[in-house]
Length: 125
Image (cartoon, rainbow, N blue to C red; front, side, top):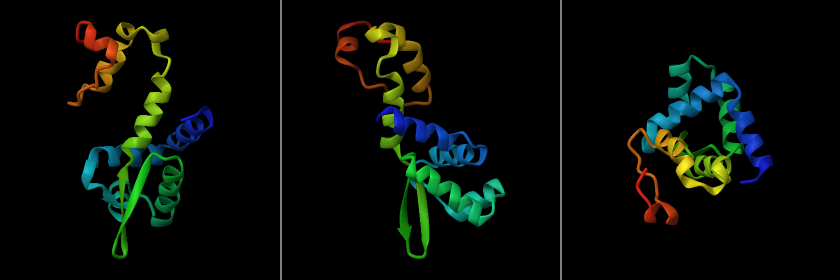
């Protein structure tokens, strides 16, 4: 990810409804959600929801799959990972120990950080 792509992603998340949609899709996980379901949950009209979903799609933060006449949306974990990696790319000048609080906070919901080569050789976070 480059600076322009990151700017597009942050711009997409800078609007309250889109941020709410993004968080709903992260919470939904592998099940995803239909556009209509999200519209009902957030009390957002279909045409407004469609516009917001397209902005998030173009930003690479969500993906979709057609199910007959419906479209199911999911958080795009690769896109999210690319954005987080872009942000942390030069974290703490390469001093992994200083980045530990960020990694721990990011993984506090049950995920396990992938150890880097330097952290494999040192104490775990």
